[in-house]
Image (tube, rainbow, N blue to C red):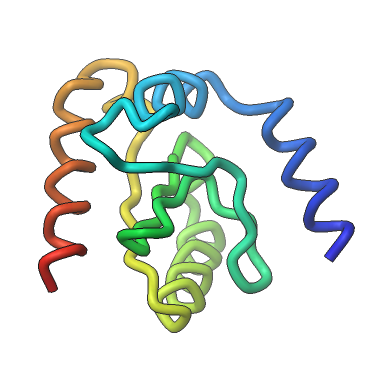
Length: 117
């Protein structure tokens, strides 16, 4: 457990630019009333962002998510998170940089879907 806490702290300190942009837009309940956490442990993984109330995980994917073994890893990770009752929304760095308003609309739509199921 302690190693997860230390790793999560390290990831928060070393966040990517895309994570920083999205985190700034979501933190302090800026998106409607929704509370997000970053670098939060779920099962054996540390996810980029999560809204616990809606059970929505946001994973931010950059260039390192395009090779077959990386896709397989992401699929395995998604399966575990879904088995824990979370929905995983994958966002691309380019979308966050180029269309943050559209990304926030997508996130808000997912939150509304997740809380009306």
